[in-house]
Amino acid sequence: MLRICPHPLLLPACCLLLTLASCGNNFGFPGVYKINVEQGNVVTEEMVEQLRPGLNRRQVRYIMGTPLIEDSFHSDRWDYRYLLRNGNQTIAETQLTLWFEDDELVRAEGPAAPDWGQSQSESASDEDADASED
Image 1 (cartoon, rainbow, N blue to C red):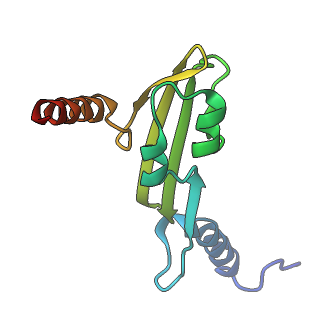
Image 2: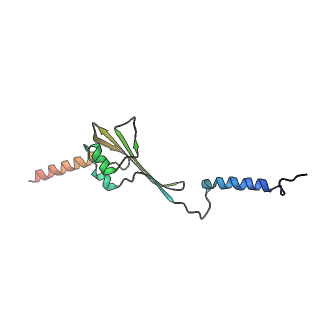
Image 3: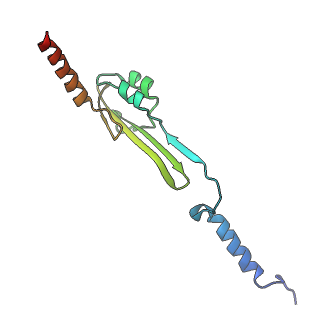
């Protein structure tokens, strides 16, 4: 009689170990170091402050860099997304969408978007106040 496996529990134990090893990323072993993974475009506050309505695409690309997503179906929309993760945990996430009309920047959307309406009305009210003081 030919015996293939000398120990009857050896084969199931090997299968169990291989299964656990392949699933290692899902539950994580204690003490295992996970690196931070950055994906997308880093968008700083200084970059967003330089954006103004009326800038052309070339100027926006110079300030912001190449957008992560240039949708061929929506050529007037550029998306800048940034994601910082450590394993399965999201540490930071930003999204900025820029809209163009006739090759000029017209609006920005997202949590990091500038508030052009407020800044323009504040500057106009400051100029009116300065003019009334003179």
